[in-house]
Image (tube, rainbow, N blue to C red; front, side):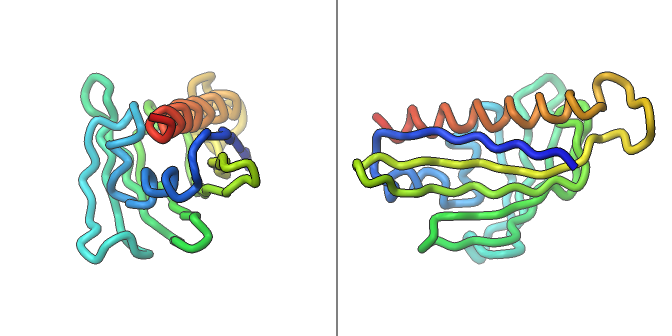
Length: 155
């Protein structure tokens, strides 16, 4: 199992940062790789809500995700990928946490951590489906999202 953890310190209060990401269906508003998100959030951001992300790449590949945990008070959410195009993100059995923590100096820290397996389960995977490709892809997703959250919150 592979793991990636990325975090960023944001020069804004945690409540402001959380308001950017607390709506499970609003990922298209803060993640630059997401062109559009079709969501089944008719009951709000509740456990079991689903979203289908259309990625801003040729052909508009899709990633299907489900909200597994949501705690507004602790400013944390957990989701999993239920279906993906491995050309977009070469992983299986992926789940992740996204959280915001208030710092004593008035800033906040956003942490995104996930665990997953590479897309190719057998020995000798092709380069685009191996552990390194999976870690690189997830890292790039986290870094782009966190950078944009920081930019939006610090405006």
